[in-house]
Length: 226
Ligand SMILES: [Zn+2]
Ligand SMILES: [Zn+2]
Image 1 (cartoon, protein in one colour):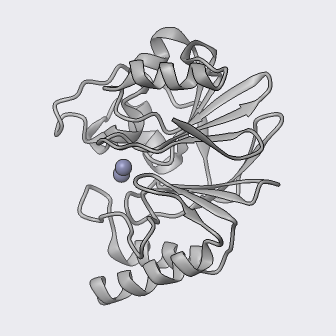
Image 2: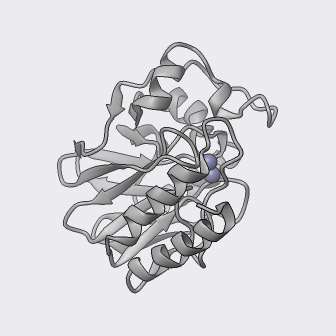
């Protein structure tokens, strides 16, 4: 079930291989951050309907990075809607030139339709979604185009597969992964504080994100000897 974590922000925590999915109700704009694998799209539609939303009404999809468990749902969404898709330039440039290797789709036996990224993200960008704005933090390490997204005026950050709860963090052994960059990205997050973080998998981080980010940063430093 989607849980409302702040005004207009709904999070569907996954209990499968899917990523967590965030829905932003921006009035005229209906936004998803990450889309899951697409294997559970009927369930996604049912859960969206419970909060008065629908796949067919999605106007914008912001991706924290392009792995199949975050991007796969686009196959279904693009059949029913024509959303503007946002992704960091490091991964967008590859996908726009037809190179889908970074998505790991073939590794997991999934197929993706052609995807055109029109919203090419850079460090410091602010995505204007009307009633909400997202600030982009470039946080490479899990993949070169991994980003964290601050929902401005809501005290919420979406951390993708960079920062997880419980001192955990994303793996770095996929293409373009880099342990040193991940440690630096976690250090950045450890210097910020938000009321809630929405990681790409598993549970939310509540009651202040700084402490959780410091724990993950310290753990990553030890693990990667950085
Ligand atoms: Zn993931
Ligand atoms: Zn990932």
